[in-house]
Length: 145
Image (tube, rainbow, N blue to C red; front, side, top):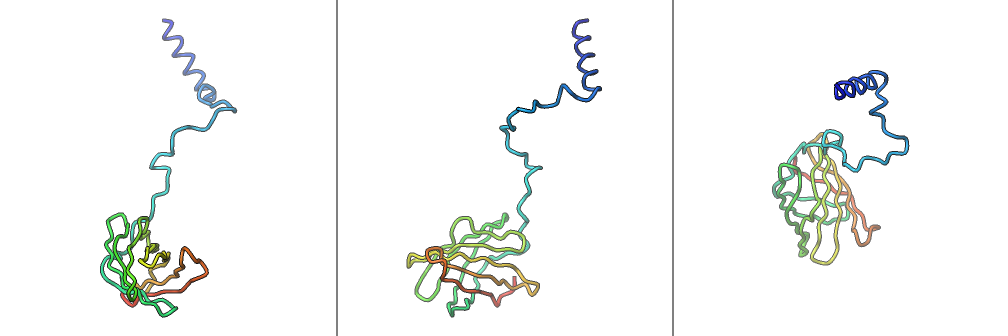
């Protein structure tokens, strides 16, 4: 009988405005991270950058890239510009119609490349040297994706 009274009191409290469930004004935020449903997912890759292709820079440099892309859009691979070779660094990816990657070059520099897939299905963007950010260039591809 005592349990039935306690249950009835709880239900009455909930019916009268949910006071029993309201957090205290001084309550600390939840220590639990947001659920997957609450976190905005990254856009699925709208294209594959996999394969061998050339990137033409406005400063006259042409990079040849050999790229592998996984199903999540992460990029892996190598690059060559003249006699300088490079590796596509971790964290490089295709996200929707955007592409961003960093190439760690054998001469000690690292280039950050950021671009987008255009309506003509070609990539265009800009690049800068991470060790000397004032060294910048625009780039594009002739290959369609």
